[in-house]
Amino acid sequence: MTQPAYKRVLLKLSGEALMGDDAYGINRATIESMVADVAEVAKLGVELAIVIGGGNIFRGVAPGAQGMDRATADYMGMLATVMNSLALADAMRQVGLTARVMSAIAIEQVVEPYVRPKALQYLEEGKIVVFAAGTGNPFFTTDTAAALRGSEIGAEIVLKATKVDGVYSADPKKDAGATRYSTITFDEAISKHLQVMDATAFALCRDQKLPIKVFSIVKPGALKRVVLGDDEGTLVHL
Image (cartoon, rainbow, N blue to C red; front, side, top):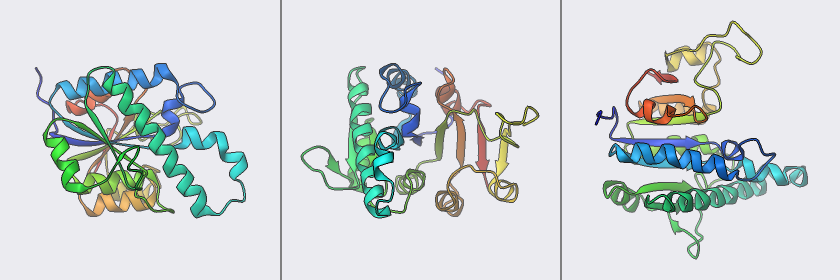
């Protein structure tokens, strides 16, 4: 078996990635495909934690949320991530993986609260930990939650799964001449105004010397190749 390049990673999934080609919600075939990729990584012995967004659910109620207080809307988004986390954990259970959902907002009848020592214990036991409800605070994105939890658990890298296979010099959908960066430094990404993560998350990763790998979750086998250290996606580093 090929040795993985990392022992412990934090995988950031967007809620939108769960929609597949649907307008909103969770596409069953899409979540099953993601879980199959996660299972391949788990077989390598990598300790895996996941942060997932809630855009796929919140998108369905977004028109009704227009004009809503920002903090209230953010809390709704956090609850959407709890729903996604439960769906992801159940899909993993169905393929024989053991997952634990830990929420930054107390909903103890449904999921256990986030407690750092417990999360570390689960990872050491080989369980997959899904961090729900973002940071538990409004005005912070799930990108920031990924940077925060990644730092807290001592992850070696944040894997940011998107629909694009890396960071490009320009929008590849609009510019046919756009090129993918194999590696780029935090400072270069800032100077070139490349949107890797939101500013708070990006700054936290930079301060904690936590590299980010941006890759496509819809590309078959990409997650495993990233974990094995192959030239997949874009590595953002110091």
